[in-house]
Length: 251
Ligand SMILES: Nc1ncnc2c1ncn2[C@@H]1O[C@H](COP(=O)(O)OP(=O)(O)OP(=O)(O)O)[C@@H](O)[C@H]1O
Image (cartoon, rainbow, N blue to C red):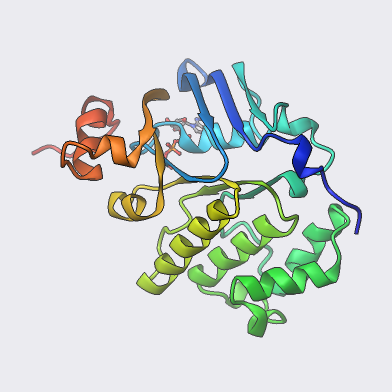
């Protein structure tokens, strides 16, 4: 296996500067600036349509910004020679080829970054899928697909990890497992950015939070600071996002 980037020469930071992404006239992301640092879990929160997924796609080089920039380890991730070794991402757990086995799905990804079979076996073991490694992904439950997506993100042992709503649709056991996995990755000194709509879960998982509304930054702070006045994370979230919700039912 060829080695990825030297950990000592990368800063592990996600830096978003004046990022704007428009689809037609409407900005999905509107002049967003923030920094995500290593060693903690950063929750990325905001109402539906606030621009979280668009921002993550821009960080991963999957969406070209209209203006501004997103950098990982000090440069555009689209220029990375070692994508899986630098950044691991889970954007959509269902975006897998159902006819492939779990092992083959991961091995296809691994080969593109010159990662060997032994590492594929190790990450399957790490996420608890060793016993179903030879089963077709099409037979997997959502929880198993989320675990597989996390295994894919971990393949290259990256220092930076992005997870877009990884606990959506999971049972309590799966939610607890993901919480432990994210906290463990941050404790190893990695940078972990995770979007979620579950405030109670984020209060347990994240150390830092970024809150966005209508593509703009509403808060960049720690959970401890946000809840220092005795408010819950959910109360603080509603106070910040109150006027930025795109759709609301009539009362
Ligand atoms: N490919 C696209 N074409 C047109 N509009 C888009 C596209 N992708 C996103 N948008 C729009 O950009 C805005 C931000 O969407 P985005 O998916 O980034 O928000 P989000 O915060 O991730 O939302 P959710 O919490 O619902 O997943 C929304 O108004 C959405 O409709």
